[in-house]
Image (tube, rainbow, N blue to C red; front, side, top):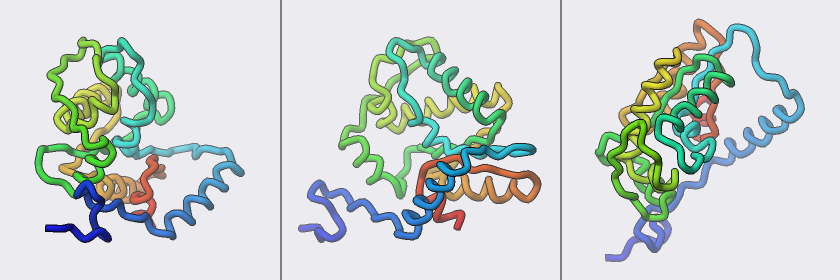
Length: 192
């Protein structure tokens, strides 16, 4: 059976959706405003972080242990955002709306499952390690516990976290100024 080419790539993965034009237009205005103002919010501000964006924020140094990598994230988050709320995607082993996207990003490689301990030196590249959902969920669990020990609030979604990230920021904004930190256009669309 042949798949309709308008919906599927030759690799039988669904085609990547084109992000809406309004999001692209809004990002351009936002980027202009950022280069012009150069000020961060001050006062009684609390940050809500997209945990998925945080995971991909910087490279993992070679020869580091999983504990060292977690400490890099904790130091970065603490110094830049204080005690934010982090919201992570969940990878509970069931089908997800983002399965095709994850498979496309990994280049079709699902990676090997690694049974790791905190003091174990990372032997694989970050992208290869995180391409495996079991590895990714276990690392998120470890990082979440480290962030919580340093006063951060962490929430794990059952699947895709975009809606939970936005609702967390919007609900909490009723009581305190909130800044949502993420680079996903879907977050912007949900906020609008």
